[in-house]
Image 1 (cartoon, rainbow, N blue to C red):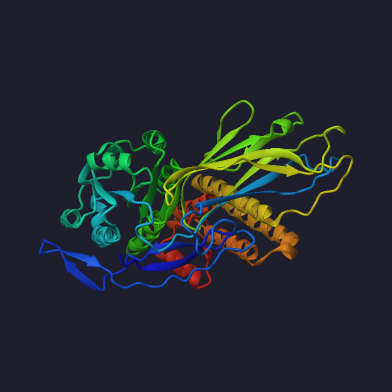
Image 2 (image 1 turned 45 degrees about the vertical axis):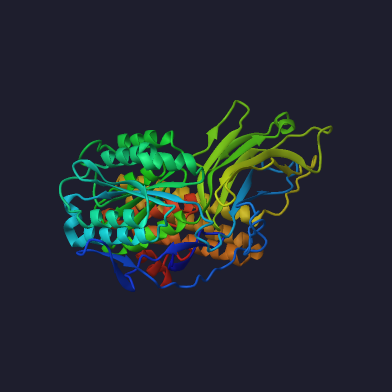
Length: 538
């Protein structure tokens, strides 16, 4: 397959790259068996222009990984390596960093994918040629799938309908899918609950899908939901609809949900909440009709580069440290689940793309040693990781990483703050500020929402000034781009009109990108960044 690629710098902190497939207009058309339709093929290939990760942060992954290189590496860093017992701090943070390897450009080595698209075909999709653009996009998406991959299509208006049962994409099956897509038309209302229910049912119980999932343990399963409006048929209450989605996907933790909000009239809060019911879920805001191809291409590029599935961290307090008062105060991840009364947690992270990074911050209560237990390094946490390696096609369980902090008796000494951990704390605090601003603006408190974002920007500047002497290039760019993100969000909080038209959607999109550390861009955001605007790191 000739896959056209686009280099997108993203993820504030690591300046990572993700392969984003360019679903552009084709160089030439290839006719299908339907003489009235064309299957659009792009034969051009743009060479990738990869920017490597920071050398000090990169461990296992390399530019030329061999066939035995694990897909993920894990490192741990305390915020302060030394905190004396007479220091004022009673708590501190530990950052667990997971990095994914580079994926070779060999289509046979990547994991097979099972994509089910749930497409809104309500009457409003006929406006501005939106449905026709989506139909073209789906045909281009099909071109990128190989014979090991599966595709299915559910449409929804007043009701949901299975248009293309999930099947492997042989040439004949692609041709039949294209013919079905060409016949779609817009009518009726918007039944999102019916769509998500039918999509999950087909992906988990459909004939060929079920067979393939049993055969291929490393298949990447995802649902792509696109809508331009509010739910007005079936379950329409946002809270109930989110709970329904979570219930449908809770027993199928290997399915990721990608939500695409088309235009200014969709419910961005709902789609972002639905996306967050799965650890790898993502929300795209497609502000301009013509940008649907870029958004789908961005998502597909990630889906086709998954190197690890069902990634999960287990974070435990070291047994000896528990006797010295160590406990987990908070894990800065919304999906963290407590496992037992001893304070052990599991953090599900879902799928990880090639070259992605995840940083999980854990706030802990520091050990209070006695003279007998004082030591240069006191173990505080033990952190291990498990995942399905889709490249090596095997389950991986890492041994526990012990994180130690020096607690010098009767000393006020505190060592220099770890810059990477400090920068990740800025990301977490900015995400919290965005969530608070969204809640305030949703309740028409726009002045308070603006103040919340401005205050967070001031905090970032103050922290940056305190840490700047120790910044490297990557961390310096991160701080700059995080401020750009906040400025971008603030522009949508100027009035009720701007918040309704694009501010709430953009805020949800940017907040989730920072929270999940995953790119989810459509073309207008890339254009903004290239012209000196916000989101320059996404």
